[in-house]
Amino acid sequence: MIADDDPGIVDAVEMILDFHGYEVSSTYNATDLLVIQPDQYPDVLLLDIWMPACDGRDICRQLKLQDATRQIPILMISASKDISASAFEAGADDFLAKPFDMQELINKIEMLACKLAEA
Image 1 (cartoon, rainbow, N blue to C red):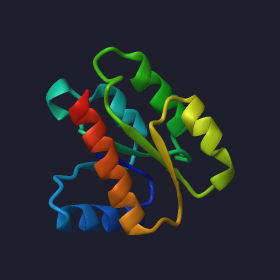
Image 2 (spheres, rainbow, N blue to C red):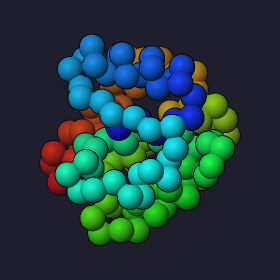
Image 3 (cartoon, one colour):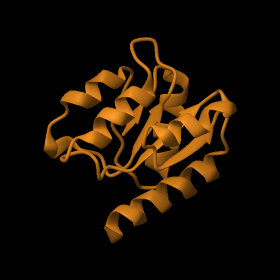
Image 4 (cartoon, one colour):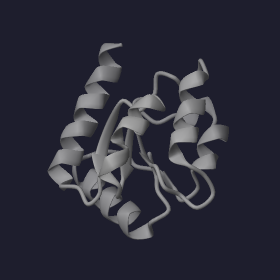
């Protein structure tokens, strides 16, 4: 699942992930993540930090505090490279700075998916 307010990023990432065989869902509003039902939980969440309605780090913290969602691997993304430490402090499993290389994105998603499968 992708949560990013930039339609260009969402469209590009959806196309690349779809090409690599992933089933992708997306939202432009990260607060939607707080009300998704268990049957909609993603295997990996790609979450933007800077969004108009909320801070992705706050959403990450809330997801990691809930028993039902804490196991979801979260890859946080941001155009600001200097805030990776705060992403990890919020509970992110990994961080990727924009603009990012699509192969690096795929590698990180595969690593996080494997991590979930091992748990």
